[in-house]
Image (cartoon, rainbow, N blue to C red; front, side, top):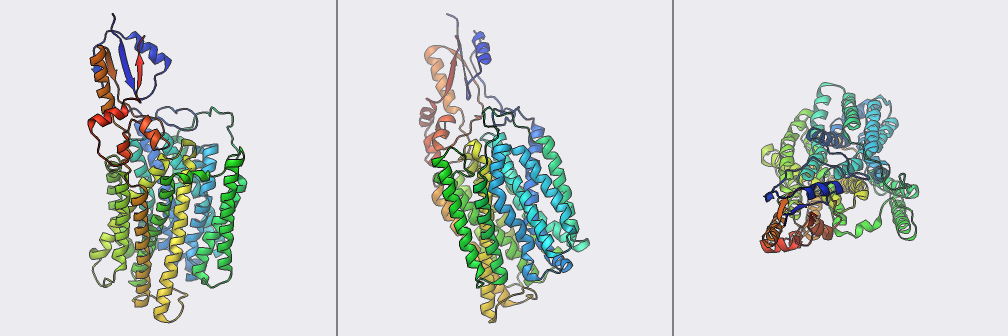
Length: 606
C-alpha cells in the first residue's frame, strides 16, 4: 500500500494545493515549523496581496506619523506658544484656551462619522483625505488676522485630523493578523500620540524662542503633506468588495444628532471655565446636548432592530463587556494623562515662571522613555496577560499625578519629583493606549473596526474635555477660595501659593481618574490572558499520535492564523487557545492538547 501524506495547516488549502499534496507520495516524515509569512491584509473583501517587510515598516511609520501630528496639533506645541498667539491676535488670556479647544472639539465630534465613512468607502481614501485636509488648513491657519478666524480654522483642522484616526486603526487591523506583528504595529502607532505631545513641547519651545509662532503651523503643514504623499504610495489599495452593496448608505440623521450633541456638550464644558458655571446658558446647553445624545442612541437602536438600514453605530456593541470597559477606561485615562501634561506645564511656566525652553527641557525625559516603552510594550503584549499591563499602566499614570499633587516644596530639585513623574506618565500612556486599542480591535468584527477605533478615540477626546473642564473648575475654585475672589485671569501667578494649591487640587482629581481606571480594568478584564494567538504544540503532539497509530507520514506547518476572532468563543476554536488561557488558570500539556484536538484542519491525500 502506497504511503499517504497528511499535511496540517492552520488555514484550509485550495483545490490546487490539495492536488499537489496528493501527488506527493513516499516522502519522509517531516515536522517543519514555518517562519512567519509576509503580512497579508484582511481589508474590505478578500485578502490583499502580501506586503514586503520594507513596505510594512513604511506603512506603520506613515500611520504613526499621522497620530504624531494629531497629538502635536492638539496640545503641547500650541500650548507652549499660547501667550505669543494671544499677543499677536489680541486674544485675552481667559479665551486663549479656545485655541486648543477648537481643535479638540471638532476632532472629538467627527471621529464617529469619519469611522463610519472609512468602513463604507474604504480606509485608504479617508486616510489620504484627512491628511491632505490637515495639511492645507494648517498651512492657511497662521494667515488669520483675528481671533474668530483663527479659532474657526483650528476647528476645521480638527475635522481633518478626525479622519486619520479611525481609518488608520482600520488599516492596521486589516493588515496585521493577531500576533506579534499586530502587537508591534499597534504599539508603534499608539506611541505616536504621547510622543507627539512630548515632541510638541520641544517644537513649541524652540520655535517660541528662536522664530515666529507661525512656523509651528508651517512645519506641521509640511509634515502633513509628507504623510499624505506617503499614504498615497504606501497604504495598500483594498481589493474590490464581493458584496453587491459596494456603497452602503450612511446614517446622516444619526451623524447629525451625535455630532451636534457632542459638539454642544464639549462647547459648554469649555465655555463654562471661561465665563463661569453660573451663567444661565451653560446648564441649558448641557441639558440640550444630553437630549441630542439620548435621541441619537434611540435612533440607532431603532435602525438596528426595526429596519434593515445600517446604523451609524451599533449600540449593541456595548453589550460586549470588554468593549464598553475599554472605552470607559480610555476616557478616564485621557482625563488623567492630558490633565497631567497641561497642569504640569502651568506649574513650570505660570507658577515657577520658567520660559519655554526651560519648560521644554523638563519634558525631554518623556521622549526617551516613550521610545523605550514602545519596544517593551510590544514584547509584553505577547507575554503578559493584558489585564496586568492595563493595571500597571493606570498605576503609573496615577503615581505621576500623585508626585505633582503632594505638597513638595517648589524649591525641591526637579530630579526628586518632576523627573520620575514625567517617566511614569509616558510609560503608563504608552502601555495603556496600544493595549486598549488592541482590545477594541480584537473584540469587534472587521467591518466595525474603523468605527470602533473612531468611537474609542472619540470617548477619549470627550474624557479629555470633561476631565480638563472639571480640573480647571477645581483649580479655579480652590485658588479663589484662598484668595477670596474669583480668578478670571491666570496671569501673574508666579510664586502665588493660592495658585499652587489650586494646581495640587487638580492633580488630586487626576489621581482619582487614574484610580477609577484601575478599578475598571481590574474588574472588567480580570483573568484575561495575553492576546497572542495559540502556539502549535498541541497540534504537533496530536499529529505525532496520528502518525504512530496509522503509520501515515505527515508534514506539519506552523502558520499564523489570519482569521479575525470576534469573541472569546471564536478565539478558542479558530486559534486553538485553551479556555484557561483566557481565565488566567495554568493548564497542563495534556489540557492544551485536548483543547486543540477538535479544531485542526487535516487534509488526507487521495
